[in-house]
Image (tube, rainbow, N blue to C red):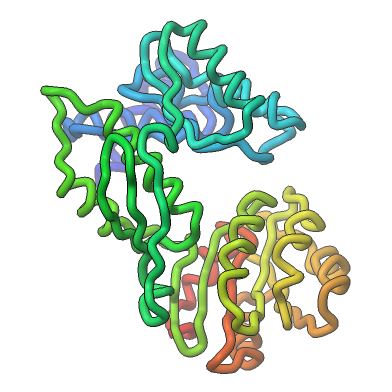
Length: 334
């Protein structure tokens, strides 16, 4: 009901001023209006793409956060990490601190230069609160991760999100909280611990079943596939992959990360802008001869389950659109 009301309200204003917003501009405005109406204490605003010219960048935040820089949306942001970083740095504001988990010295120098121009300070996450993984036992391995921090906060934290990258993300969130702490805003250590431990993220290394171990991950670009590959390398289980990729993504590059892990690959298509299955198969053949295809997601799931033994893993990945279609048939996977 609230979405309908906000939609009508924004459409009326846009018509009055003869503005034709994009879908993303429209939904960004909708979210800003909603947060204002609800009088939220804190809103976490993620850019849609880039930074400097992003619709979200009209705000003046408490802190600007740039997690790290990798290749994505090169058509719009540039084909080098430096060009992408310059666009991302556009969210750095005058006198507003900036947090980053980036470690590339060239990119850090670029961020530092931007911060000097904007009369503000760049805070590097590992210098604010350095994080170290604590080993969990075998039974806990696919349930949560523990890590310890030193620096401005020395403590032990637990997160349900899997993968080393999520420990970096969690410590980035902690560093951001430390940076904005003051008398008016005092976020307790207990609240930070609870917030991290209760956070879930459907479609990101999401465990659907344990026998066989079925994991859904929305990796949809080379950086995402590389991160997924790093996680998969932590287990020796035999792995099958159910894959659907969007047609505007670098299929060959994505497969170079994920396909070497696979014993069998099942190729399918989501409903929204799917890549041609023949193209995926062509590149997948370099890594395994055991490839199965179905453009029907439900049938593809059934094939994948038939091909996966109880002591093996099934990874479902390639596109956020595709995993959304898979999750419509979640009951088959459980």
